[in-house]
Image (cartoon, rainbow, N blue to C red; front, side, top):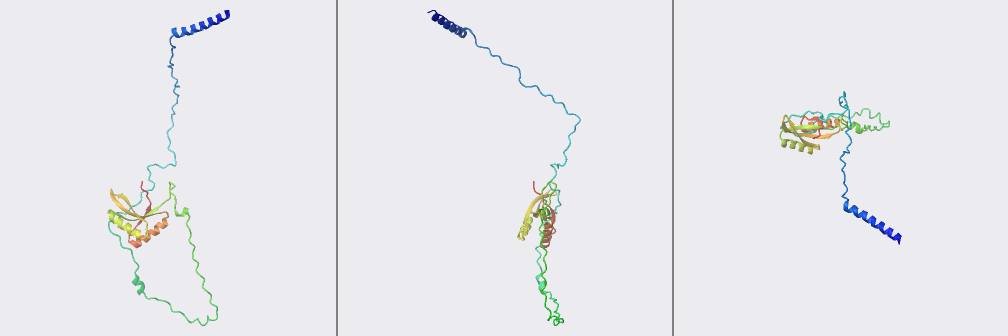
Length: 221
């Protein structure tokens, strides 16, 4: 009986403590830490006595990929028509064929005739990639174009371009400025071999009666 009373008194005491805490104890105060957690700025000593140096082997961005090329002066005169071979001169020309010499025919009847050896044709040398095109300072393949004409009127340039295309040439029109005025250049190409460009230039000059110009190919920006 005494034991039950002690347990009951202990329970009442615990309940009284809890009730006292809830009724008479105010809310807990929360303190805000106002101290900054940002680390201090690191100290950097200035570097004195060292001037910046430009690295070598790097070309300026303002430098053009291709040096300025010469241009034909614009002219609006139609080029001559294609030169055709004179067939009448070829037909009217007398044939001066040598007469066969029969003086030694009798002496050669008994001897066996030797068949003529066929002439050996030179084998065409194939150009390698390194020979057909070279690389410039930027590592780009050099290309060439043929300036056939330069006109101030687009209609004249178009007429010449169409005639060149009918002749099997890869012609196109490139609009540029010449002395602050627009001009229309008729170009053929581009070609990766300078020798091929020179050969095609001679062919164009002979067929169309022009004086063309071989220059580097300039890509438009």
